[in-house]
Length: 568
Image (cartoon, one colour):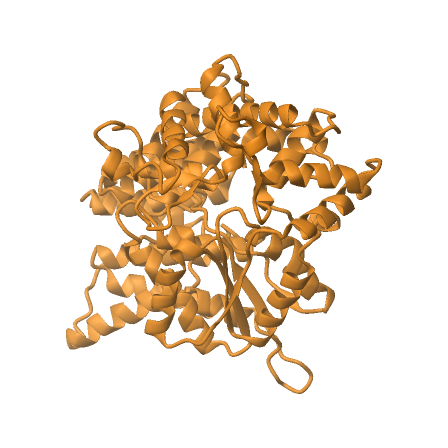
């Protein structure tokens, strides 16, 4: 969601804008009763459910404001809705062999535990810890969801091993936990890829599709939301608004007489237009009002997309106009367009898609304007450059989120540049924010194979947290720093760092696991086993500790009991 809407959400009344509905918006979420019931029954009756549809049709809203509250009302145990966003609060170098997307998912399923506990746990062990039985000893159902699986299915260089591995891990968890009911949301364009992964594992599943709203449902839902907000005569206002959103403008030369109406209503566009006009205090919903409001909205979104991807605003604007002018599949994908627009990155195009401005072409080779209702406002924006709006200034928190999103998406250079710009900002970031940004730079350096640079970043971040008394955060960074130094060949400094960290991590199994793994890497297998055994005595869910301990034991067994000696 664009930042300007987040900042003024209180003025959008019964509309949520382009962001999804959440549990707190349940009283405004209407028009999907049948689909919610279908989804709840599928999720309850099937071990694996796929909820799919095009971007912006309301999958997240259906899940968060519909299915989850409905199950909760029945007394079901539902984990918080999972999502994927890599977090530098737990540095990558602490447990470098663990899947970072697993950590991200478990952090969202159990946010109160992360990052102090839980980062070194597998999905299977996490779910085992959350299993419950009834008074007859039968496992109670546990409902879990991963919303927006796209980061696992799309990336600049393909999904990659970590992304695909998380899907496999979730399918294995279904086999091992008979009480688990898992729901994944996915865009229809990626459904075939997900189906193939599920079929390869031999897992049965059910699919529920969500599409655009029928006009009658859209009018009914909008009228109920308007009535909740106290708008006078909500039904006529809802009818006018829905008709405006459905309108497909005719060719400019022939005028409005040739306008047509779409057969369905785009939920994202309906919420966006409603929020724009409500914020402006408009209840007329005249065509000119809608066109102007959408033109200003497009200007804001394009400014923000360009700022997020560090390109001139004219670049996404021109590409969007080509997508609109083509009428069919539209503007070619970035690789085909690279000669004309070398800065038109893979991520920028997908951000335009995520902002509900473009959609993939039917043949999968290009992109089209998402909705024909945007054609006229887009043309107005091109013809009248003075139609522009100024987004709210970037904050440090904005930079942190955008950098983490780029990292998760698979754009490390962009993530790093946002982190560096935030560190140079005026006023400067607070120590904790500065430490988080610096830790992110450490993660990026570590992941690109530059451990000496990563160690320097982690050391700087540790000093910042030491100054504010965050001993737990310092311990994480000391382990990350030592792990990086080991990979850089700085054995003596690494061992000093591990000794310093050892006195701080008694209550943190993940950090002690990281120390054990580092000791193993420098050939001190017995010391590593001692550390890992102590972890498992207190926490049987420390999956990484168990995995590393088993590898060390296997190595020692194959060496016929010749245990490397030495004390750290």
